[in-house]
Length: 115
Image (cartoon, rainbow, N blue to C red):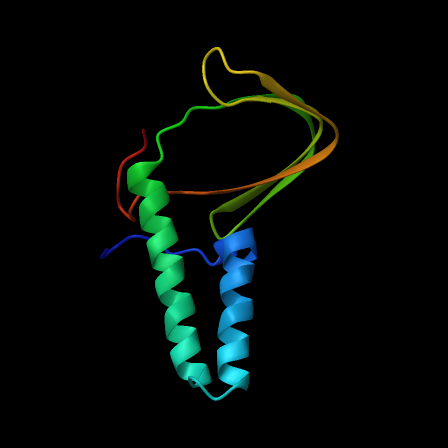
């Protein structure tokens, strides 16, 4: 996986938080060290990043009013009001009347050209 950026924001997903809880319990019960738990977390980050880059090929259409956005270290965060999301052609639309936050990261390896 050389050259690919690894992002840690997957840790706040449902599966990431469940993993973190399990690792904390194992560390607290002296079943593993904190260093070992951090190695597992790091491997989780790499595995999720690789799986999303190589196995997910869904397309989405997103419409909404951009309230504001920011870019920090090539990680974009968009805040939208009244958004509509359609995940596949012909799929039902999901309407979000409240606010929607989207975090987007560049999935290309460093040095790769623009698509």
